[in-house]
Length: 426
Image (cartoon, rainbow, N blue to C red; front, side, top):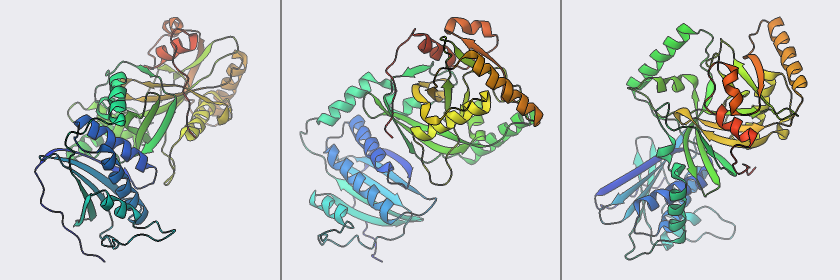
């Protein structure tokens, strides 16, 4: 095993940014996006594209050669006093056998090409051991008099047009911040990241709050959920939704003002229209966490099993399952189209699908059959009532509270508001 090559002494660090990622190849593009955006926000006077390429090569190398199941990869950017930049990529493997190999890769060989490319760009490379694994460090120098690149200008323009693009804006511990937004999303990418790190005090507070809630409602279940860790605009029509695996008790920590962490939920719903222009809504049963609340059929998203990822196809399958479980209507997931994306209370992200129109009689019949079957088998239906609305004006007649997104989607359904039709890259 090659011995570590300690980094040279450099100028003091002025600003830092870091993030952990799961070690799967699809995070390479997300890392590039994060680094480009961060350096642009810092107005770094160096070659941003060289820094993005450096990060990309080091991350890809770590994922390919240092992957350990269940372990994370870390990226750190450090802006130095002399204008230089440090890019640290940390992985769980305590060694770097190929680091000292400066020979050119032969035909068909991939290993070693990334480091050779970076050295040819003049990037100073070093590596050192940590308590658990190693860190590979790249040092890039500032460029004197560099004018902003096309990409710099593009991302600054996107920021000015899409203020929700910055990750820190997308995450909140305030239940009413912001009001529900209807996002004009045409393309949606989902990328898994690490969960938020809790202190011992936060963990204790979370467990206490969960015990209080389950004592009041024993039907609550600490099941697996998907939590949003960031929402960013890749361009003016493409959103990258970062998510992590958690359980319901993390969501209740938001109720503790002293220990809350940003933990927006990610949920799906199904807009089920009737053939005469109405929209089906349901009231949550008393046994649910949203007792008495009117909403569209749907629910929070459960993380996929194992190392599987999330994409729009997986979300549509989840939405179809929610429609079957709550209304008793079996709709092929391929018939569900992503219709709208909302951001509401707590920063919760709603991914709303639209189903083919059915008659109100068909929907009422499916729901009645489901309720009868549930009661016969000793189960409590998730919805204790269904109804139909045509617009936001009909919501008041339902009686009781409504999901925060329902008025916005009712307006969208009736044509009172218009937004570009979302799509996805499968």
